[in-house]
Each structure stands twice: as C-alpha cells, then as structure tokens.
Length: 380
Ligand code: GLY
Image (cartoon, rainbow, N blue to C red; front, side, top):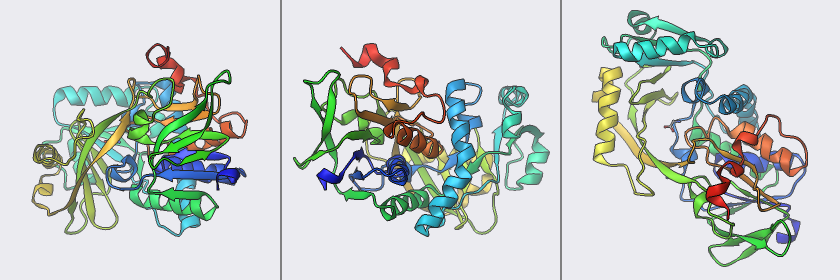
C-alpha cells in the first residue's frame, strides 16, 4: 500500500473524507487514516447548519468570502455525495430565523439586517407576530428577528457517511481504527520535508504529501516544528422527538439553536466550553440548553429527549481555519481548525487542498488562513 500512496490524509471526518474524494477525482492515490470512535468527532457531533451570515458575515471579510464560496458549492456537493454513496443527506434550504427577546438584541439584529452584506443572504427584519405566523411554535416573548433566507442545513451524520462511502467508492484506501501519532520529517532537507506518518501502533507509512485534517486532535500530532494551535472547544447537544410538525426553519437565539430534521427529531445545541477533552454531556450543559430552547419554543420543554452528546470543535486562536501548505514543512498540507463551521466549509476546503496538492491555484484566496499568521507562536 505504502508505495502506491501519493497522499496520506490524517483524519477521516467530513473534511478528511471530502479532501480524499476530491484528490482521488484528480487522479491521486490517497490513504485516509481514521481513528474511529465516531461520537466526539466534530463532524458527527455537529448540527449541520450552513450559516455564513450568522457565523462570520460582518465580522471577518476573508472568512466570509471562504464561507460564502462554500455555501454556493453546497447544493451540488450534497447532491453528488448522495448520488455517489446512495446515502440521502437531507440538504434543506428552508432558511433560518434569528430571534431577539430584548430591545438590545433587536437593535443589534436590525443593524445586521441593514448591513451591506445582508442582501446577499436574503436577510430581512420581521416583527414578532410575523415570525409567529411563519412558525407558530415560537414564544409570545419573541420581539422580532431576522429571516435569513439563504441559510440551509444538512444531516451532517448522513453527510459524513456519504463522504466516506463516496471516497472509498472512488478508490481511496481507508485505514480505520488507526491514529496518526506523528508526522515523520526529513530534517536534512531545507525546508524540512515530511516522509509520511508514524501511527500510534508504531507503523510508519510513506507518502509524497501529508494532509492534517484531524480536527480537534490536530494539535496533538507530534513531529512538527511546533504543535499546531488547535484546541478542543466542547459543544453539548441533545435531540428531542417531535409529536408532529413543529418547526420548518432553523431557529437561532443568542443562547441556542434548534434544527429540525426530517426524521421527526429536533436538535438543540450547543454549549461552547473550554473544557479540554472532558467527557460530556453534563446535567448543567443540558439544563442550559433546555431552558434556552424553551425560551424560544416553549413546548420543546416537554418533548422526550432521545439522545444527548458532546463533541469537540477544533478551535484556533483567532477562530479562522488553518488551510494550505505548512510554512516550514514543504510537503505538508493543513486542513484543520474549522471551529464552528466544519460542515459548511467542507466543499471549499476539499477543492483548495486538492488544488494545492495538484499544483493548481486554489479557487479562493487563502493567505488569511495560513499557519504563518501564528509564526511567532509556532516556530522558533
Ligand atoms: N456551528 C454551530 C456550533 O458550532 O455550535
């Protein structure tokens, strides 16, 4: 296997699987190393919201350009993965309602609706009664809010399954149950080059190019000039079973979000905790979510909980992902640190990383996402 592998991808979540599939489509021989242990990985723990407007618009123009490009690609990406895998992925373009309960929140959201980027996402301010006409389950305490027409959602667990199946179907070699412990380096070359990876089992795998797509575990991969600045940011979530029609839109408040699924579940998320890799969920985390959900949609409080879980977002010091060539290891690609937006950013990340690996220009500017921005902290 080692002598037919051009590329090793460390991490087989949605990002790693999407990259591997895209590289394979461009003719590369790819091996993905995936630890497994599915819960706790960000791709499966996420809610599947595709929300550039709420997450990055008006805050970070470079990030918004990246996120908007990925949102544009999502319908085709989801359709192709579903077709290639036979796994339905429930891409929904019903939009999102972002709610205000106080005059302060209302003023903030009205300002967002008037900002220059709002038209691009089909954003309009609606009064409370207009929101309740759209979604009768909403509380009478909702003062008003934004309707964000272009926001979408996807069943992220199905999407990961689809991406893995599509990648494997395209001929990607999938090494399940193995974790990359270290990048192996040829330090005699200048700049250093990676020779491949060392697995936790002690096995060495050789490759021409290595990609780190290991999410929150990326910061633990040894062998680099400095550890990658990626840390876990815990998110707790739960799912409740709906008695019948309840919500059409994704709902967001300052405290929580509610994401309806076609299988009759409502996802309620998510805490944002600097708890390291501490195991969750916790009673306190779930209680916070339950109260926040009930503030938006009171009847949610009496619905049966079917599942609760915790995942670990891969956070970076500035909240932007790490994308592109490692500045000090010539043939090492980074595709990690996607923090709150890993599902949304999968299609554009796959295109960027596959383009770089095949010596073609990336489809959008990526300088803002280089590890070099942290150079004082991560080198020398
Ligand atoms: N994308 C939402 C979250 O990370 O909770």
